[in-house]
Length: 180
Image (spheres, rainbow, N blue to C red):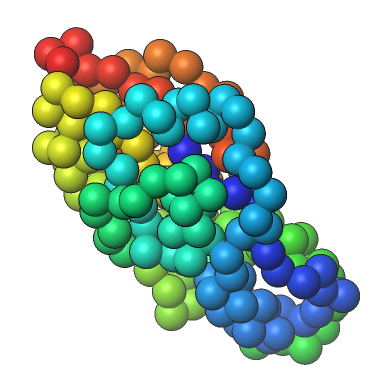
């Protein structure tokens, strides 16, 4: 499951250089404490084990669901966004995030975890989830890009996706292994 909507002030247009501070602020953000969607609450109630990334937005999402994580691990944190050093042009942080994510996928990492390293971390995360699952449902409260990377690893390991509710905040996908 992806975390709820982060509580971060809307920023004016910023430079590539200012993105470093915006990313740091985003990484420290909790979520807007609105009630979780009913579908998220229902899915969360089926989990025997709750796993969360160590990011505040994931941990506060677990709280909003009324749960306590059994495992909190940075392995499940979002793939980092690079940034740059230019003062111009000035764009919205979300436009910069999109640009930097595309650049990151193409190999630009500028001092943050590379795509290849994130892929290895996603593999380790998928293995950890598989070990925790056994015969019991596990709920991971994570992040958009890393959740998709973990999902690819699960699918490659023989798991199948049973349902998917998109990629927005609070969205979730359910995976099942034939041996479970």
